[in-house]
Length: 289
Image 1 (cartoon, one colour):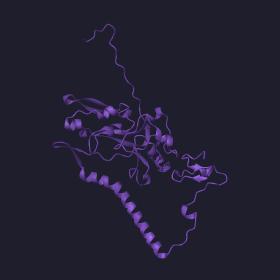
Image 2: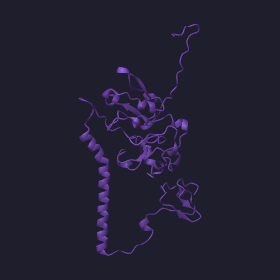
Image 3: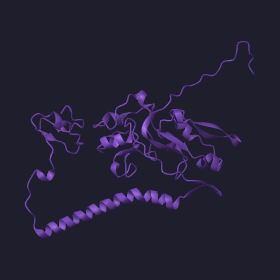
Image 4: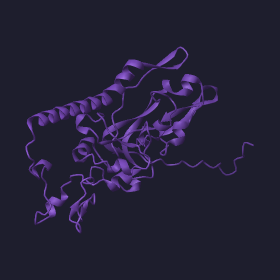
C-alpha cells in the first residue's frame, strides 16, 4: 500500500479499487508472498460455453461496437483538421484582405514531462492530472501525439491556459511521466514557444486597439509596441516565453488565433525577466518641467 501511488489498495478489506489503478505494477515488485499478482480478467474464472447462435450474435455485436468506436475516434481526429483545410484556407481579417492560416502547431506536453517521447512511454493515460488541473487546460489527446499518444494529456490552449503559480499535475502523477517541479523551476521550464501571425492580429487587420496577449503574459515575453494611429501591436521576446498559453487563450481572433504556442519535443529553460529600473537624473541636472 505504501508504494501504491494511486492509493487503490485497501489492506483491511483486502480489496483493490480497479477504477483508480493505473497499472504502474509497483505493488508486484514489493510483495514477497505474491499476494498481489496480475492476470487477465477472462482467466480468473471459467465461464460455461454459450450456445452457438447467441455467441455468434454477441460476437457480431461486439465487432460492430468496436468498429463504430474506431470510426468515431477517427472522425474526431480527422474532422476538425479537414474542416479547417476545406473551409478556412484563408481567414478574412478585414475587407478585401486575407492572411495565411498557420498550420496546426505541435502539441504541448505538461511541464515536468521533459521530453514528449519519454512522456508517452511512461504515461498510462490514467487521467489523474486531467482531473486535478485547476484551469482544465490538460485534456486527453486525440491524435495530436500520433496513434501512440491517444488519450495522453496535452495542453489545450483553446480551452484554458497553464496557471503560472500551479504545479498540481506533477504532484498527482503516479508514474513519473510528469515530474513534480519546484515552483521556481516550473516558472522557467520552457514547454513551447509563442509564434505570432501579425496579419491576423485585430490591430493590423481591423485597426482596433488590443493588448490582451501582453496583458495576460506572466513572463513579459509578449509586450506591446507603438503602432500607427496611436495603436499598439504585440512584440515577442522568445527567450522569456515558457509556452504557458495565456496569450493564445486571451487572443480574440477566431477561428485561428493570431498568437499561438508551438510545443517543444524536448523542454528547455527560459530566461528570467528582470525589471530594469528607471535611470535617475544626474546630479545637478534640471528636470524638463
